[in-house]
Image 1 (cartoon, rainbow, N blue to C red):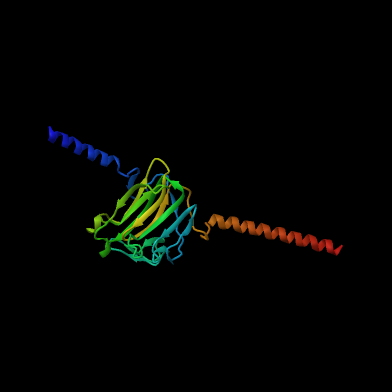
Image 2: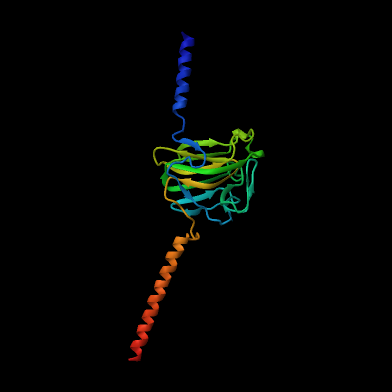
Length: 236
């Protein structure tokens, strides 16, 4: 009887542990696997620093490391991917541990308006600092409750997953933060469920150029007409 009681207690413990899992979202992978997503286009700014940097649309980037990269186009090589110079700009965490605090190196995106989904092309590397922990990507809500996470390098035992598109999707718009930590992790081709974001100062599309030129021409024509009218009035 005692053995049966212990067995029931153990099963209850396992069920309770499973029920306390932070997973509230569905982890997804593959380009285009996030329905209704729009691009978060990064500027080719080639900034080395910790931010925060306003990407636009209420989305900001930040890191606790001063050697992290934002809008980098100079190329990058990790153990599982080589990013050629001039490819779409990336964000990159260049450390595994934060020496000052003794904790993990981190970079993160903040969404002032929480989203229901996020997707990015991810690449990373194993190094001597990740032999006890997994490089990963984490989704949190606005109260910093963990929604879900993806571990990339299998607790330091070699690359557990290939580089590619990874993200989160859930039924409600609760994702307020996306964190990357504990390795050299890079991301590009970002998208989320929300309005498309283009960097400030981006080159206008051809149609936009046409409208701008038309507007400038109309302004010039109006100015010339006014000057001509003034000249005729002065002659009288």
